[in-house]
Image: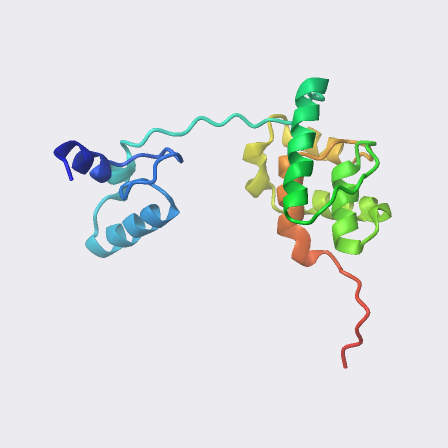
Length: 176
């Protein structure tokens, strides 16, 4: 390995795009935490040189233009076909994320109100897990998300995934 490549593999970087041995992924940070605890080293000094990755939370605010939407949709259909899957149309009334989740969990999109209620409950109970990803006042966000017809976003989708094991899933089995 050249000296330049050797330098790259030993440097630390917080960028997701790096996959070098010295990149600061969860495994590396975990190893540093363990090492710092074992050796009594100051972890802050070891990590202080890292730059934060900029992150701006985003909420779906507008519908993409027709051309981009068509290209994206065709690409999605092609990808679904590759796996033997097909698109299932969900009513686009602002409850579509919750309808789709209800369809997957309960096999009935009409249970979207129940899913929305469970997601909002998750967002309330675990505020500190989600608040940093919401670009407006959290109470205002919760109030909006309670309303039927309000678009779900990446935060509600994550909350639904986190809450999934807590959603009652009806089944046909009697457990004795």
